[in-house]
Image 1 (cartoon, one colour):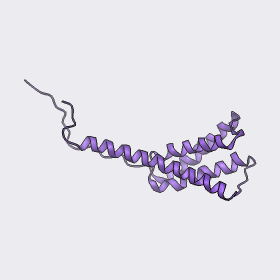
Image 2 (cartoon, one colour):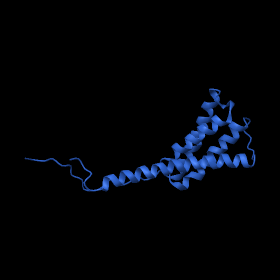
Image 3 (cartoon, rainbow, N blue to C red):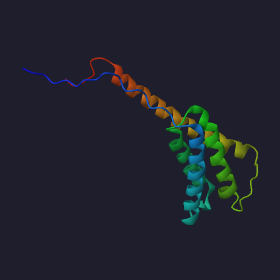
Image 4 (cartoon, one colour):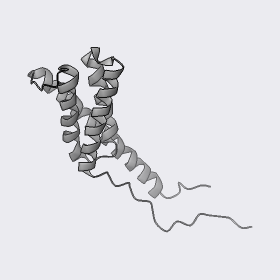
Length: 136
């Protein structure tokens, strides 16, 4: 009897993260489009909606990024939050602890996205490299 087995010469590597400047450019374009869409549908009546949407964007941008891209993602998202969601005239203003908390929340979201991706990649690499896990 012949048993067919796949030939694998090497284990697939963990995906390489996207370059940091590209992630920052994506954060700029994504934040701009997100704020524009939220403004067009009238969802910016509450700054909490804008903050949650930008946090979700920060998590998504953190998925393919390196950890060192997280502060840039948070700052770009905060600039759009502060300039167009909190103060609709496009003026930046620092409101002390409140803005610091928003910035920390955006940074946490970006780091969380990166952490989720790293854990998922590590688990996938472990399953690919562990002997005896192939099809029976």
